[in-house]
Length: 428
Image (cartoon, rainbow, N blue to C red; front, side, top):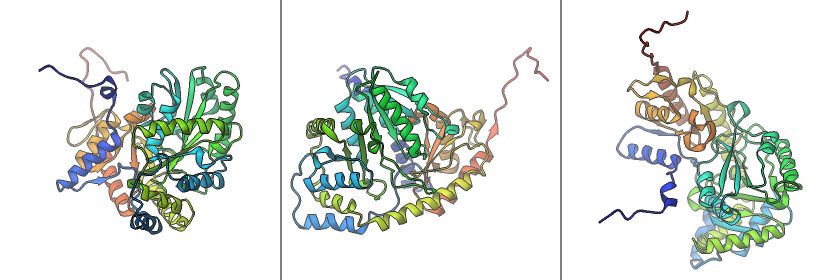
């Protein structure tokens, strides 16, 4: 029997490097190896009790049947109220909100609803690994806007302006950023909004901003978060995507949402309703009351405690990593990641013989020699092939133990001597 084969679409997809590394580390742990994992972007806290109680009570009340595809009216109203009162996004009603299976599905739905074949999506890179595949699955073409550690992994307004064309359909903003751990200041976002507004009035009338704000509450150093959807120049063309996974320690609950005001927002949410109804329908009905409790502010004290813990960890890991040679990275400003450029160690060799030529080989050497799992940056795009992502969503003891291992690897690397070419004389 000949090869039956799969679709080109399936064949073009790469597995998530984040999940792949986490899985490899998990398998090594299950085999009894002493592995320290710094790969997964998942808080190590338990969901606040009041949220858990709301779901339990909903089960006891028999809320076990189908929910509306985009969520119950109460849950959608809670999202709309939160976005208006906390984020300053005006003109939202429950009908402007779609609740989905995590922020990931919400982003996928948004791209599916917005993009046609060949539409350009402006994507600052390095960026979360799922943006580009989701865009491409929707027929879009990724236009990378490169950043680096020196710029804090942030684009400049003039860089954005130069990249916009009549084919530009979406600008993706993720602040605070996964994988970079940095964020745009409010004035930076206002400057970007001016560029988008000017472009929409001239060369790119269909340009939409998709802003992923899943880490909005995990901020350090007194920083403040600004939602682009609250900026008047672009409010009517901004889709806000968020969820409960990170700030509320609810990754396993898979609750995300997307919202957009105005007539365009109603049209977009209507399209998402049709798309999601053919995929998953709604999330579990007994989760709806938990959404209302989470967004009511009842658990704000617990959220503040978690953020304070992350802030202590951020300070600890930054201080420890500054002492390791050849690590270049901006200070963490939000989320719980450090994205470190380790290219100073390319051209070296690990004790087990691994040649360090990329972020991937560095991560492989770290796992093989020191049993520490980090995410290599290749799949994040841009300069990611020079960087590793370290998640500090773990205890301070694990951070100290892990950085000890990272430091040990770096100090054990030896420079690979290049063989002399016959007849070649070195310059003095």
